[in-house]
Image: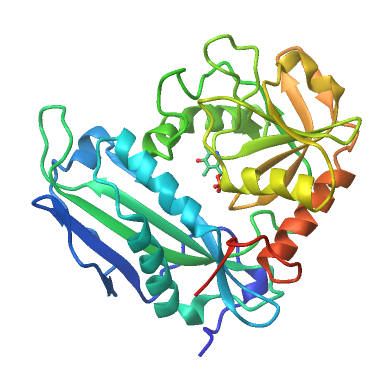
Length: 339
Ligand SMILES: *Cc1c(COP(=O)(O)O)cnc(C)c1O
């Protein structure tokens, strides 16, 4: 039976549900994996994840659709990206087919925690893995744990999406041949100081530039960026140090194939920002969040779409993508994974 939760007033936070999935890696192989009620992780005080941050994660959601099915959005891409992250961190990738099976198992076990259609809430799914045995010298762990927990979450922005303000920070996010393209906890640890500093200065988020030339737009600490030009072209930065957002890749497809717009991935320079008419952040948590203002040191760029609502094109992108996710609009082949 559906849990007795005020679905309409959920925030974006952790809530302990009944079940989680666990598989352990030891002696060169992953254990068969199981659903458990135990939400506590017990590992060595010298575990590689605690000393050297050997960990990566994923984030996706389960939705209840219009016809009351429970579905995930393109989880095969999360499985693949997590395997890529693991390899870059010298961790044994969790097999992609088993990742999908684990997502299915953990959502099924927690099916009463999936918010109802139309509530604005969804079930956030957090797969992650970490080096769990004691490691002193700097080297990869020998043993790992892969887990998935879930948590019902409300809309990322309560009371509608008010446009936010970004600032170009004096901190860098990712080195040219570093780890910016993988979903590693370490990328978030080092972003905490920059985000606290941004908040202290009255900005919502940091818009990072490429660290090599500091002339090109990359992304924020946890979301990719799209822009709309004055000719209604949807553009997004091309760079090897950006995290390949599944939401962004899907939005670019939607722009081209559902809205008939030109969608281009290219280098975007900070000094062309004043030419855009709309800007939004994209990622699983918020789908799209409109940007109204970008502050680059002395320069203030006010997007013509303003500080009150989504721009016209970004609103259409948002409506179409969420329509596909909730089963109101037909999805491209392979995008919807039924639980
Ligand atoms: C997770 C993440 C995103 C968003 O990716 P989605 O697959 O769309 O959820 C964007 N940027 C960074 C740095 C991220 O970690």
